[in-house]
Amino acid sequence: MTTSLGRLVFNRHTLLAFAAGVALCGGVVALAQSAGAGMHAFHHGAMMSGNPADMAAHLDQVVKHLYVEINASDAQKAQIDPLVKQAVDDLAPLHSQAGSAHAQFVRAFTQDPIDRNSLEAARETHMQLADQASRRIAQLVGDVGSALTPAQRQKVADHLQQMHGMHGGTTPVN
Image (cartoon, rainbow, N blue to C red; front, side):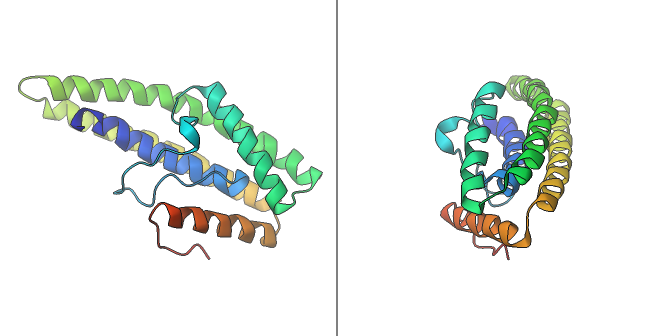
């Protein structure tokens, strides 16, 4: 369990940010309620596989599903699709960087004695990567939100609130 802590911290922050951003533009379920909560896998692991092709295919399905739910126009779809694709492309390299930080974390943890300085360096790297992902997702959310009507944004928010509640969340979105 402890050897996976580094991966959970990075994946938790990165995927939470990624899922929240894509959810606002495409209806993906939020992964977790807060930084202190455990990570929740969803959609049969498609997002957790780390395979960019799997993640892109899954997100494409989810976005199409949400388009139906919010009755998105063709013009909105044409505006949103490239935003999501660009965000996926921008965020994909963070995954491999996280793999390197995770390997550093595991090496530090398994040394005798434990290399606390390396543990801290890996933690800092994870946090920096999560911050980068969070910033990119905030940009995506703003861009996509600008393409939606207030009523459509409310539908997405309602959907997120419902899904958030399924994962133990209690904070209202609206």
